[in-house]
Amino acid sequence: MTLSAPPKAAAPLYRWLTDRLAVYMDRAPESIDPTVPLAAYGMDSVCALSLCGDVEDELGIAVEPTLAWDHPTVAALAGHLTARGVRLPDSGPQR
Image (cartoon, rainbow, N blue to C red; front, side, top):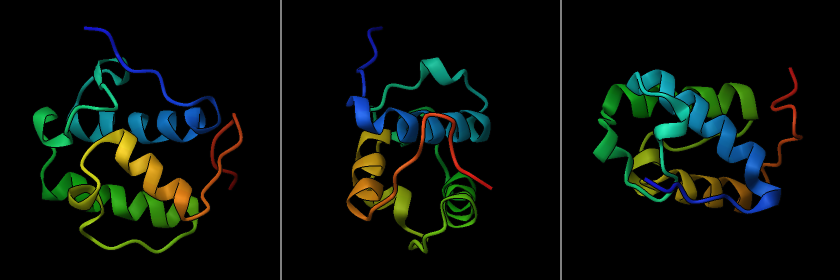
């Protein structure tokens, strides 16, 4: 399978999202294509709410609990978060 490459400026956010989703869904991060619906990888409500919590805690923005259903791919999630002003340095979230 050939995975889609994220836009260069959004690469850290794609990586951050993919790393978290891989843990929630017990998959290798490199196996998650940013254009494939997360439900195809086994996304469930527990994973979706865990992602919302991480986004709020680590990225510092409030999100709706339906975030992963409203934006069902890594690319869609990254696009939505970028539109809301989320930017990550190459090293990831700063704590």
